Length: 358
Image (tube, rainbow, N blue to C red; front, side):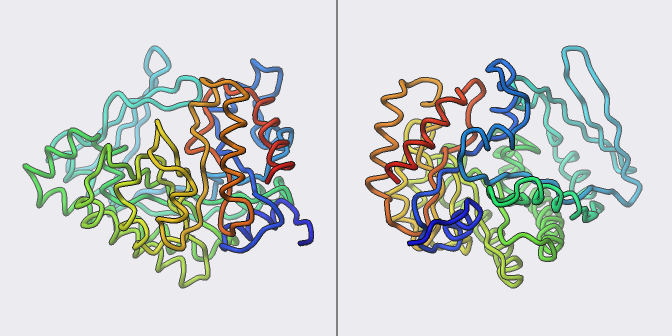
């Protein structure tokens, strides 16, 4: 088979087609990039990925701005200790979130939604959220990456996952669903309509693929919740994108073995960040066999990059290559974000190993 450019290899794999060799594209973002200066490299993610030599898939590439209608106001407050509070103010009431960054990762101290009234207010905010395309930002990123890979826009996750991860937190979402189901279902409806507007906007972007960070895991969601509240939304989002000829990839970095049948049934085209133990619970070759025709991205336990020896890591990468070599629809990646402090030289050695063995 003729040699492919990095961009050609990534796109072929995402389409479920045969590639000239296994593509290696670690999920690297600011969590990793913020540790580069301590290793003698600039805080420049694309430059770092080029140094590693891997195929580039840049998540979270910019593509729009958020605007509010209906009298929604935004107030941001800087607090001691590098913390930030964001207040969303309406005539119905006010909700706020408090967070801080450490080593490139965001930590939430206070969620937007803590009470039923907060849920009512946020439903109003969701119904008055508008997205303004800024596709020129995406085009600039595409030009920067060139034939070394692709940028990808990131679209919203399902409303249930948004509340579990961001808006409410696990415990509060559970209590509110039990105690205030009607209010929470109205919130989910508002979030879903807002999300569909975002996906509809992305139909016009010049990108063949869209990612969403669904982060499904049996550690935070039952199969019933997934089937009843997540899957129907993901299927609608997939249909919106498929009607525009786009590939839809859902990031699911948790424990997935209990969702095999459900994941195989959803209409997304692939699963990103498939992860073995201990973060996840499934090897990429088992996911390839169990998730139907889905493209599989992942395979490497991210914490192993800072906790295991180089020989141990390369041994597992070799096992992955032995299982997945020659199989279409696979990209070797980390089963979530490359950790802060991961050696850039280690990632370079993994890429060189895959060049020989993949």
